[in-house]
Amino acid sequence: MEIPGRGTNMTRTMSLLVTGSIGIDAVQTPHGNRKELIGGSAVYFSYAASFFTPVRLVGVVGEDCPATLLHVFKGRDVDTGGLEVRKGSKTFRWHGSYVKNMNEAVTVEVDLNVLAEAAAAIPPHFKDSKHLFLANTHPRLQLQTLQALNGPKLVVADTMNLWIETERPALLDLLKHIHGLVLNDGEARLLTQKQNLVEAARSVIKMGPKFVVIKKGEHGCMMVSEGDTFVLPAFPTEKVIDPTGAGDSFAGGMMGYLASHTDHSMTAVKKSLAFGTVVASFTIADFSLDGLKAATRPAIDERLAHLRAAVTF
Ligand code: AMP
Image 1 (cartoon, rainbow, N blue to C red):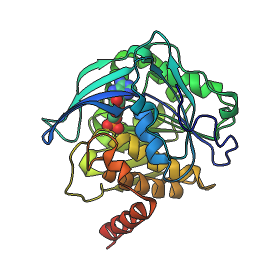
Image 2 (cartoon, rainbow, N blue to C red):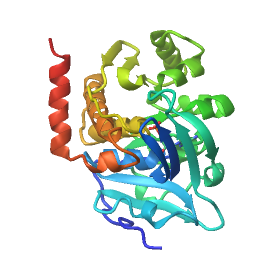
Image 3 (tube, rainbow, N blue to C red):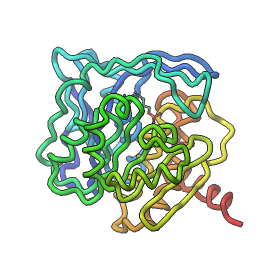
């Protein structure tokens, strides 16, 4: 099967590698139900980050994977050289519902399938990647990917309630090896057993990461590091059709911005959060990747200016 983008752009200067889930989603929102949608944490992340910098994607799907999923990055600067189509395995599937709460998905059903197997191999020419995003997947696979690289200078991970509840020791081990953790408010509370989010963030810092970003859906995000606390509202938007992928797109905008700049100071991280916030606002305006597909870099910059104006007084 031919996968567009495979093997192109071998030499990367702003190298950003992502691994995570690549799958098929079914979603229910107050705006309708959809099945057989392209989804997965690494898919949303890659598409979002590619507005800023070239992306190297590592992940695995089963042989049942539809061609639409393999061709989703056509025309984008996403190198799919690390995308494995595994014979005899089945693609990851997730069924989520936002009917009760648009800020937090309820997992109706999840079939890990190939995600429960070995991690995808990392192509040798990806191993020099300097920026790594470990999108939501099994923490054991996240750590394997991290350890296979030759000294990335910025490593940020995402996780979710499933892994916090079922793979806590593996997750705590991963946290000792990363610079930043991105997770939502409910997950931060579950991980730390702290209700107050500032307290929860401080507890995460004690687990290893230098900074933690807590996403709060329509209420924006908060970033806490040893010496700094930063808060940002969400982009004020009226059109929220399907929040799936908002978190991954947020991370894609954030990491894409950081990978395209040499400055990784906390000031730069704060600006990256504003880009992440804006990119996520495109994702939620439609089902699957359709909202992101409608975005352009000038439109992202325009919304960034609106966001800046909305928080300046
Ligand atoms: P979010 O950005 O948090 O809305 O992530 C949505 C994506 O995460 C969906 O496209 C799902 O396919 C994917 N997903 C859901 N559950 C998991 C899981 N346990 N591991 C990895 N990916 C998942």
